[in-house]
Structure formats: C-alpha cells, structure tokens
Amino acid sequence: MKISIIIPAYNEEGNIIEVITEIEKVLDIEHELIVVNDHSTDKTKALVEGLLDKYKNLRLVDNKKQPGFANALLTGFAQASSEILLPVMGDLCDDLSTIKIMYDKINEGYDIVCGSRYMPGGSQIGSHKFKAFLSCLGGRVSKLILGIHTQDISNAFKMYRKKIFDEINLEAQSFDISFEIPVKAHFKGFKITQVPTTWKGRTKGESSFKVFSMLSKYIKIFFWALWQRLNFKKNA
Image 1 (cartoon, rainbow, N blue to C red):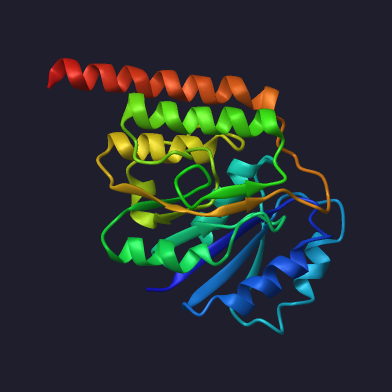
Image 2: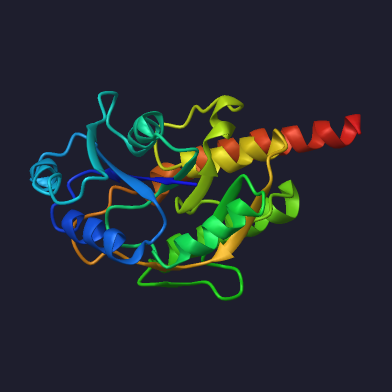
C-alpha cells in the first residue's frame, strides 16, 4: 500500500528542504509527499516549488481555509490519493525511521498507529519540561481512564487509515486535532496501537504551538470522551 505523507508548513523556510530531502532519502515504501502551505509569509512555498521537478511524487497545495494546523492537515488529507495517511511535521522533530514500523502495524490490521515518546523505547530530546509533563500526563490519563491504547495521544506523528475520517466529525481548529482524531476514532471502534519513537525539539524557526492557549481545548475533548465512556459503561 502507498502512503500519503502530509507536511503542514507554516513559515518553515529553514527546515522544509531538509525534511523533504530526508524523507526521500530514508523511506523505501511507495509514497506521495504533500506539502500544505499554511499561509506562509516567508519563502516556504517558493522553496517547495523549486523541488517539484526533482521529486515527481512531491505535491504542493495551499490551505485555502482559515490558517491553522487542523485546516492544513485536513487539506492534505483531502488531497491524498492513498488510503494510508501520515502527518510529518515540517520542523524535523519526527523520527522518520519509525515510519516503517508504523506501516507494519497498519498491515497487521490497526487503523491508527501512534508514535509514542512515553512508552518503553520512546524518548524526546530538547522538549520544554512543562510541555512534556502535560503531554505525558494526558497520554497516561487517556489510556487509564478512557481506555485508548497509547501513552502519547497528543503527538501529531500518527499513521491513519483514511476510512476513519468518513466516520468521525472533527471540530478542532489547531493542534488539538491530533488528540481529537484518536479519541473519536476509539469510540467508533477503530483499532489503535502505539510504537516507540524519538521526538526532537526544533532548532530552526519558531513553533506556533502555545501550550497554555491549547490546554482548554484538550480538556474539552477529554471531558467529551469521559462522558462517552461513562455512557458506554452505563449502557453495557
């Protein structure tokens, strides 16, 4: 099966050439590469355009909706030609060697495979300690209380079967979409698993993720999921 790799890119001129080059260097699975320009104001779009002749499987699309990670991601998903989807961040934080392991799990029958920093074998380098604490806590709570089989539910580095998006209604507008997708897929009965990965903090450019502004969004999704869980137990 071919994989569609989606790179949401907002002002990633310092990283975008390197991340595309690295993917093409290390990945030997048939794939297409879709860069979604998320209203960048720097040279991101022009740099990707300069690579289109070199990499025939590379496509560039614009997020024509409101700017933001969720809309950029969904734009890429909608453009994908394959049934397996994988977001890869444009700042070189994701461990590309994990992709083959994720792909093997998809072939075993899983619908979502989560890259996990917090399971045995996983790690992260250069993360803000408070942000890491919150994401680790969120993963553990989601696994213990909601029953979702991953310890790193907020990580955007997940492989999806495209069919799940026909079954779930997504409302997130930002990075919380990476939490919302597996939560809602779980309650639709899709199979979720995790594999260890290493996450690295960015060394170039500025992250648009703001932990305190995102916290309430994650909490809202969690309480929605908790209500679903309680209703399920009551009706079982």
